[in-house]
Image (cartoon, rainbow, N blue to C red):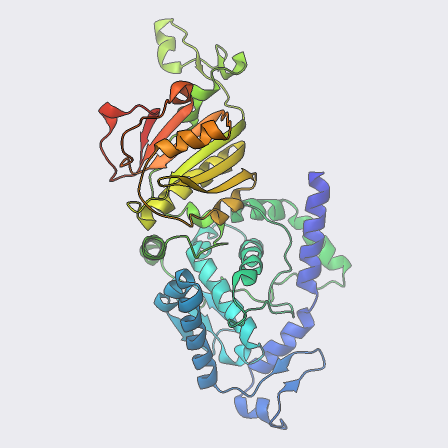
Length: 451
């Protein structure tokens, strides 16, 4: 099954790369000519090449205004992205073939942008923004640059193609059609995972290209091959600044309007990584004996001739998990982002049937049967009010819910617990935000974990 999937991925990749290669080379050749030569013989109307590429008569200033317009529109409809677009330098540079990024800025060739429609230019800009946010310019340094660029584009384009359906019609946003990007091939949680799959079959890719006419495998838009590559020291500084940019934007704008932000971006947000393996182990004790096995002894006791059962393999399947997320007025956007990051990390590490419910004085927005990690970002709190944790236990009782694992994420300012907790305490992990209340002595809910 996996072999069939890989073969399909690689076939689509090869076809996507070969298709339109001649078109791209002609466009790039045209873009490299002096403007007078390119414009000679043109009419006042847009001209179309024999392969269907349209070149408009927009001036460089028209393109700059279009970029500014896109920034303003995104600030209005998707301020998360608009805020980032405003902060990343976007530089006009005719020395680059198309568009690219070194992680510090975005460079574009106005002659190339003239071959694109407004919506396609906007797509390209946000494409480069995603490369910056995901640190693709740094994470692939020790990898084959061509295959890494293919994998990075696959991840980015997957998310952009989903994002476009969330944008209002007032914002022009569409994927370029003529070979600028690799055709969408498959979705992997991390770019490295897709890279490894493609790298393993690199010989097959080369053979496929040869069979399709002997053309050399090339990516039409090598947007991670910037001419102004950063030094090692500059890379480290730039990475810190990108992480700060992402964190500050999430803190300021929250994740509410960043739907379809690549899931792997959540892992770049600086927040404490809780040891979920250990925290969840207590809730696996009732399972089969393999969970605690003398075949996996604690090594620190071996020298004492004392073999103590160690933590065996925690099976990936955790079953039914209920996560109750505090969405009251005291929860900041940064705290909410940290809560959702923790849930994403659990869903990344374990196979589970996730149910997420937001609560303040009552349980409001409920998302059931979440089986895909990327769906975590689609779970949004639409209500915010006071705080009464008793509503969680009322909801569980009234809906006859029997969670195998229960996680409550809050700042700890939730009032007095008056509802009976009962056996739920043994199944509950209480996650308190970094600056949350000091409840160690009054914890009646479950095992405490602090961010």
